[in-house]
Image 1 (tube, rainbow, N blue to C red):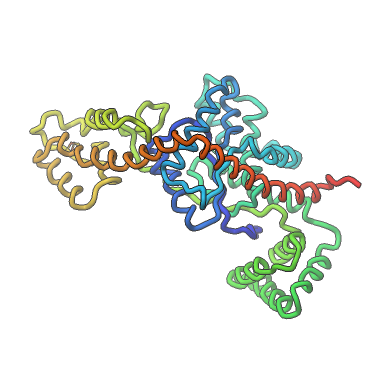
Image 2: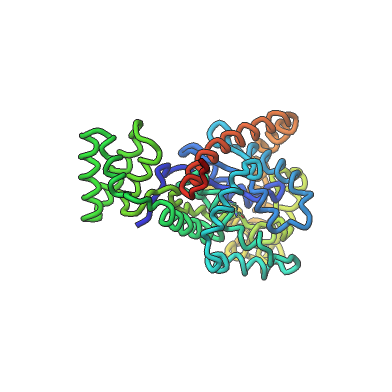
Length: 405
Ligand code: TRP
Ligand code: SF4
């Protein structure tokens, strides 16, 4: 049984600073961030150390990319009032946790993470047979565990990294959470909640442990979370006691699979800067209009009078994102009967994309006028993140006997 997070809903997610964002980012990860920020406590960060694992040979574009990316997040609607925004390297505690976790991370676990071999295959021009690259999923584990993140919104390609994080957390708790006399300590901690709560907790714990009653587990967890007068260590003991393990120092996060971006690139392939088929959030409207107008359509619709089939056309996939039922049936009908031309068909998309970009670009322009505002906001975010990270490191050091008389 896994030991879930007492901060079960805290959301942690990072993005590598790859520069300006495009519509693929917007309709993929960013959309999910935008929703989550209203529902949960969120930490979103720029993973600049992660960028170094693959771009160590030329890091000079990274600072500019960090800046552009943060501005684009804000312009797209990420709200620093709801989410904590920061830069990974400004919270050096991530590196300390990464180091300490490296002591218990079996090499085989890292070698088996699929991205290790896949990326080496894909990025043949780079030498990725480095220690940093092998260790990067563990760095990601540290990113998550240092905030005791409960949920990690990631795409399909990152699921294995969150799985690794769960295994590392389990191993950590197993090794360092098994203090001598655990059961007695847990019993004592229980009493500190008061007679009534202690009795209730005991009842719920039995229900869960003896009969697998998940509801009892949830109620017990809520009860522990609501206890203001017990210490952090006692709470961890009781979480562990409930689950049947040792103390839960680093809780296991859950994967929150973000819907893959349905946004096709201008050539119908996945939108990506490296394929040269992307529309950046900051692209000039005339340029956007031009690239949409010249976007390929159903290859079998050569002349205006040839009937087409939307299923063969990348423009149709854009209609699925941007158009309502009425427009979509107009397209289906008009395309199959050659009643409309492709330029007619693209017009509603052009309008919709430009409408979507307009407010974002206006906010980019505003933000670019206020570099101090952006800077302050990042500074505040780094500080807030760092305070939490420090707390976790205190506990981790203690658990690993890094305390000096
Ligand atoms: N590795 C992720 C990527 O390449 C970015 C990342 C770093 C991340 N640390 C994270 C995502 C922690 C989620 C949680 O996209
Ligand atoms: Fe594609 Fe629209 Fe042209 Fe049909 S009419 S081929 S859906 S662009």
